[in-house]
Image 1 (cartoon, rainbow, N blue to C red):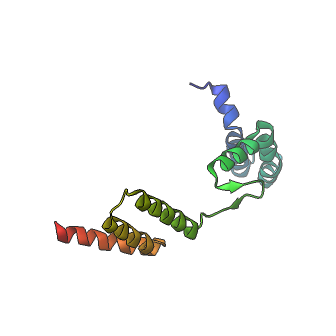
Image 2 (image 1 turned 90 degrees about the horizontal axis):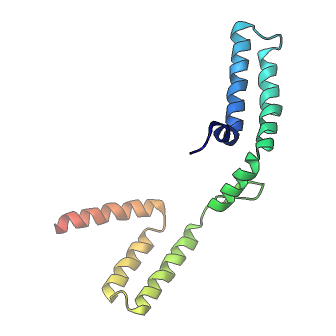
Image 3 (image 1 turned 45 degrees about the horizontal axis):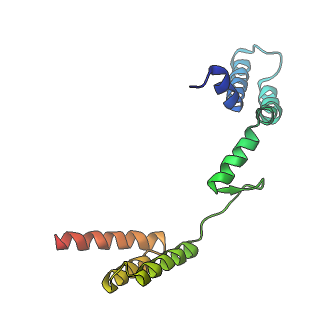
Length: 140
């Protein structure tokens, strides 16, 4: 169980952002601050929040977490979509290996191959799922 101090350190940027919004709104609606509200927002979000994030080490943790998930690579943060063609080729290779080992009969191999080739895109997969559901309902 984490302590309040540990949770505050883990969420330092979020806490700082909330405080800046609170102070900015307080200055806007009450005239409480001699500093205009827009200065609070501008300096807070352009200087204070990035500084807190860097001091808390959140940028490094975020990069490590994203690299580990395989969704974002490096500091450029380019999203890499998995290739549908590569996924289909991997699935075909696995299917061929199972057939070669004798795990699948000729009929099973052909049925799975047809299903795989018909589901090479999300639209085709949805169509195949509907056809397969209709076929199963007719059989029962």
